[in-house]
Image 1 (cartoon, rainbow, N blue to C red):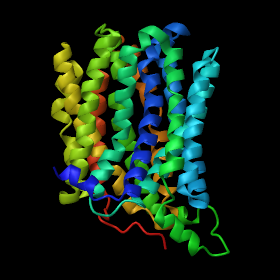
Image 2 (image 1 turned 90 degrees about the horizontal axis):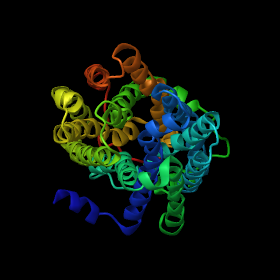
Image 3 (image 1 turned 45 degrees about the horizontal axis):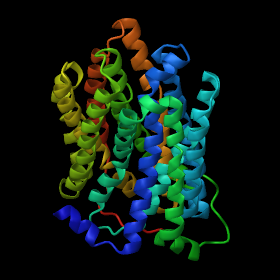
Image 4 (image 1 turned 90 degrees about the vertical axis):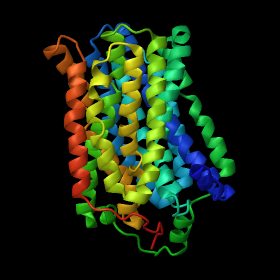
Length: 409
């Protein structure tokens, strides 16, 4: 019951802040993964190959660094709380616009704009959360916060399995605009982070030039970007085309795809919490490396299983490890970041790495179509083999500052 103990030790303000940041990230991910479940339907709607529709995923991911920089700078300048509210309204609005796109070109534009808004949420929410939460239990809260991403995937799977046959892909994107309601909760229950208020109280009349803190920590920033390239390739390489694999290669129904996705989403959620919490004991780097390497023996179940039970088990184990490694990242990046740029640096590095990995799903789809006759298992297997090894190598080559104080000087 150690997990419950972490929550009981929080003050009401700390608890409300964490809930708000968790919901913001979960619903942001929910909006993104609606597209993942609708790729086949969009291909049919616009009479295009899967690889062409996957360009929408690319544009969302490619535009995220711009959002991280824009909203991160706003968070460092004007505060975490108001920036988070603006960010949530923005991504909900662009999600709604996607529902009414008359052509594929317009749809791609709305997804690019959604990507800008999506790119800002992680860095701003993580800064607000970790500057408000106590140092004790940071690994646990890191794992739980990051797995808001998996909760978003889980919600998308549930909605797809129950509502998609009734409302189609356009209705799915309309539902995706509902997260804007979280702003009301933030407005009434959340305050600005103590660290940012402290910074404002001590603010000098002369501001540092934009980017000075980032460039002054170029080595750390560069390491983060490479690490985030590996991590984003890891998660998107195991998630984005997996429903398409189940639909196209195995001819599973929306209900079957939804159930398997629910199972592996639960695995990811548990993995993030367990391994994130474990990193408090064994260290951030060691926890990440162990989780990444443990994905390798799971490949046969996950990519080459033929029954829904075997695939669900493989998916559960795969995402337990993938998201378990990810669960350490929010705490790890915030601990490595310079205090004065914490609203910008972790999120910007995250999204630049994401940009470098943004064509992952397009490349996977094209390789499957051109080399394997539309068969996805070999592509999925090679992705995990290569990228899991890369995650382990890059992580171990870096440093860590577990337990660092989250203050702003």
